[in-house]
Length: 283
Length: 283
Ligand SMILES: Nc1ncnc2c1ncn2[C@@H]1O[C@H](COP(=O)(O)OP(=O)(O)OP(=O)(O)O)[C@@H](O)[C@H]1O
Ligand SMILES: [Mg+2]
Image (cartoon, rainbow over all chains, first blue to last red; front, side):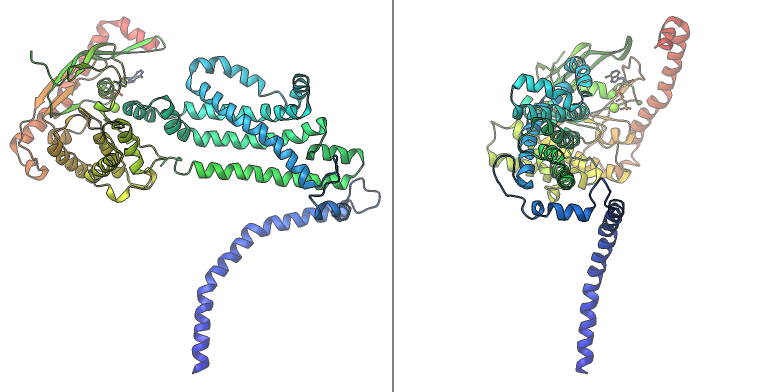
């Protein structure tokens, strides 16, 4: 009697946690398993391809054993450029932050101008369309000549790389604000500033954020190349330095870091975008 | 000639697009008294919205004038608030915020903060939307959105309330329901209303006067029908009312008999003046 009731309650609790466990298992199988399998497969292939002693690139196991010091100790600082990967990444992120934030402010302002005024659109759009096709690194010599210093040059390259998609997307967003919203603002008699903050920015926010997302990706692409050329602390120069010292394993590790950081930058901007534009996506 | 509360005097509207000119409205003159409910009815594309937008000040007429309460209208403003055909609530604001945007701007000086808050609540209560203050437009039904649009327009205490096919996008049941609400509010507040519609029953049920526009291009006021039915009006009782049915027939006759004649007349005119038709073909 006693045991049967206990097994009853046991069965009940099993039932109640059963579904959530099943659900968890389903998401694991559907979301986590495929990338893990693919990753393991790719690593395996890579390991096999590069396992011979004559291989020109290091195998994954080789990379890990070579760079173990760097992996477990990301924040050492022996002075000069000899700093841990964490510091290198942070230095790059700082440059990206300055250049990107400048691009955000300037890009949204110019985008609003181009979106609002037909005259500005006619005058500036051809200029933008030409300039945006210039590869980021082509700007570097000019900005080095102009600034006479490597840090502002790198920041400028980030700025000029990230700004075009922000301008273009913002102007499209502003031009696509429904006539109805403008009419509402006119009937209520919102002034220019109120119109900008209460109508224009929220209405164009989905467009603006898609520009911001493209922009952050491009600036991270550009920083590595720019730093290779200007030197100093930063993940780009770290890679260049490792190449000169023939430390291929260090390069592989750096690439992994660059990829992961780029991924998170993209996700952060997307996350902020989702927060801000919640509700803006029309019914 | 006694001055009307609102008078539309000899308004003409000609649009010019890429060389082609379309004369939409011709010699529109209309006087509206305080507290009157006017409907404007006419076939699609004849220029009803254009006329309403001219009265609202959203569109500038080619010639003629609109005078409200002794002053000429030349810009949109809260004294002529508009309920737009497709609700045009701002999707990133809640129901409460959509109304508060209008109230806080219109009564920034004349009402205190608490007074404005209560005024917003009162207007939303009047249209029966108190239960959804914090919902966003995407989360409420089409009928509810239109209610909020009406609350927003009423909350500005307009001298004239302008309704552009306010119930056009709604199903028959919701439409009937909202018509009742508008009649009740009209009894309560005694607003001056101009409503565009192409629903004959709606026009007869709600209006003191129905203004019928001829077909475009160059639409004029074809007929004006006084609706002399006691208020409050009840749609079920009126269904058998001889006078009501007579009015209905008058409007139907105008729309489906006389306007067809005008159409054939227009064709006739085109045959007589081949230059104008050649121009059109060119455009
Ligand atoms: N901005 C504009 N430029 C050129 N033509 C216009 C413009 N606005 C309206 N028109 C023309 O004016 C005419 C009347 O348009 P309007 O929107 O006033 O019609 P409507 O009577 O409200 O029609 P509906 O019942 O379908 O809403 C149409 O033929 C339209 O093509
Ligand atoms: Mg219309």
